[in-house]
Image (cartoon, rainbow, N blue to C red; front, side, top):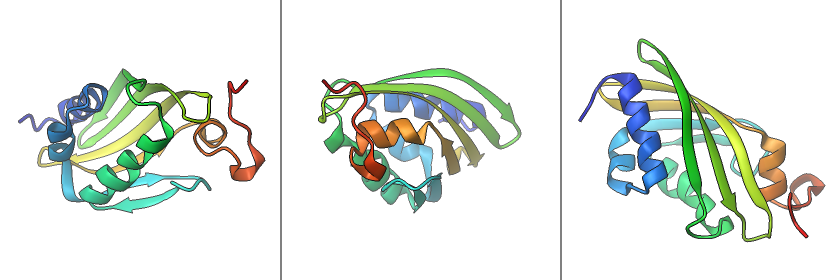
Length: 143
């Protein structure tokens, strides 16, 4: 297993892209945190590897059409233990819309594992496509 922070983050994003649950699990420290800012139902600090994987990341499954999620790593910038990664996420939603977002995560990596993430995305688009009705939004791309 690689321990260089940039390699750890790239390996993690590629594992999400490829659906490699074991690598996703092994990428996080047991007490990792993931902060998703905003006022969405998923906006908070998720604490612990299991909560991040099962509740935050896994919680998106019911609103996405299975097999439609596409993740592409755009690039990374690394300085010491800190890695900034940019990626795109695209999928069809069960509400009839299309989720198509560009995201940035600021990762802290120690001893070869992700210990914290702060993720930034277009939360208006997230609300409209993944949480229709939240704040009066309509699903984007709905007919």
